[in-house]
Amino acid sequence: MSEADQSRIGGLLREFLLDALKEQGGWGLYEKELFQAEGAQAPLLLRLRFNSVELFTLPWPLAQLSGQRRLGALKHCVITQEWVGEPRFPSPGCEPGRVLFAWSDAGGAVGGPQHIEALREACPDFDSRVVVCPELSLEALRKCLNRATEEGNPFRVLHILCHGTQLADETYGLIGSDPSRPSRPLPIGMNGLSNLLGQEHASQLHAVVLSACHGGHPGDVGSMFGGVALHLHKLGIPTVIASLLPLSVSGSVALTRAFYRTRCQLKRPLHEAYQAALAALPADSLDWASLQFLVSSPRQPEVPVEPRRVMFSEKEALPEAFSGDISLAYELNYNVAPAAVRRALAGSSRDVLVLQPLDKLGDALPASSSDWRQALRRADALAESLGTKAARVHLFGRAPLPLMFHLGWRLNRMGLKAYQPRRMGSDEWDCFYDSGSAVPLPTEPFFKQESWPTPEACREAGGRLALSVEVTLSVTDEDMARWLGHERPPVLLRLVAAREPSQTALGGPDDAARALDEFLSCLNHIREKLPQVQEIWLAMACPASLAAALGRAYNPKSQPRLRLFNFRKGPEGYVELPWSPYEAPKKRRR
Image (cartoon, rainbow, N blue to C red):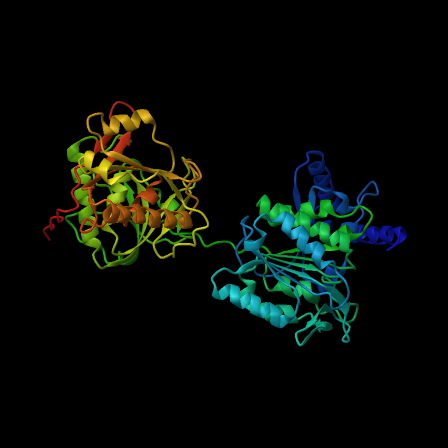
């Protein structure tokens, strides 16, 4: 396209905007806001919503602004185009998800290896995040998409690299590979992809990137039926990136590298990833004027019903609503906001069962031996009340670690998902332990463990072994000495996070599953290889969710007696709980 053509088209687009926006205050007001945002270096989204296919054929970035500038030259501005319709899917957020990169050079070279290398540079976790489909066809796509859905790990971005072309019926489509002879080109019509994706796969995708010439072309005058990109956009896919005109290989590679670096490494929204891709395009090409960013308005979430808090009472039977999946807030030091539970459970408004064993909250609770006994007894009563009614408990704990351990032990006959705040002081909770998940293959041990004590050392210590679990912080020598004492102390075995103790050492359910498996192996090793050990002193410095998970590993019938200790800063130090797992909980009167 010559400079003269660009100026002529840009002027016509400006005239159209001036005329179309008369009743909305005129294009001049929008232009003023665009320049103000540019001066303030503030990012801005310009949404163009159309109900006519013809308007999608126009290169809107070429629209002329005052001062002979082009709309697409405003680097802070992202132009989005949208077909007017009902929103179908929620906003995709910032989590990048998996990428299916499908490509074909059956229609000619497209730079496939360069694109894959750009993807590898942009995605540090390329091997686990990106799946490459080297011979693009509808059948190959169907197999990849179905397999990902069956595995419960669907793709979030579908990136297609191939040539585009005008087909015999004068519509525009893609050139894939013939499954029977991959080197032979096979056209994919404008409806092929949308029919394949349908509602099932479209609802799982956050974006489709069409690195194909004319991938966004809706058709010539007289045969404007929509084109590949517009049909995908009408499915409700949140974002479709395509090109109206031929796209340079260098531009396509630059787009790929910048888009996925921003999305996968920086985990920024899709419009920011697209903005970064635009900025990376070669200055001597018209790729910036050809690209389309088709964005669907997100479906607004339904106004959630705030979950009801139901206080557990030993004197009353549990309401019938508490069966199957149960949300439980264990509150002793702080409370758990119902809205936080709802968000953690993806909007579920199920009622929350609340266990406040001391009927009050406080950072220093439990404050006495009688407080500890009451907390343990009421947790026992709760577990008894749940009985066989609960299939799985969603546990949100704000209680000392030994009490979380005890409750996890008492709930070991039912499924458990234990949640914790994302960071200190946050009211956003995530699941950090799921009993229904298999233990992942050990890429690395979760704990680094000191050498095992000898049988002689265990015998000399009177059959006592102190076991410290150190995940969030390391136990200091001073605190350790105060705990163990100086006269005939127990032998010490430390389980320390291999990544070094920190608030982020526990990364999620996979880490918790490994930690639980290694903790159980440790207890079994003590039982089998160190029969001299008669009792284990347990102290934990870990997230509350992990303490609840570790409780599920203890079996008083086959493992040495366990004594639980709670640590508080200051003169109190380590305090032993009046805990005896050998005593059957007293039956409450009904």
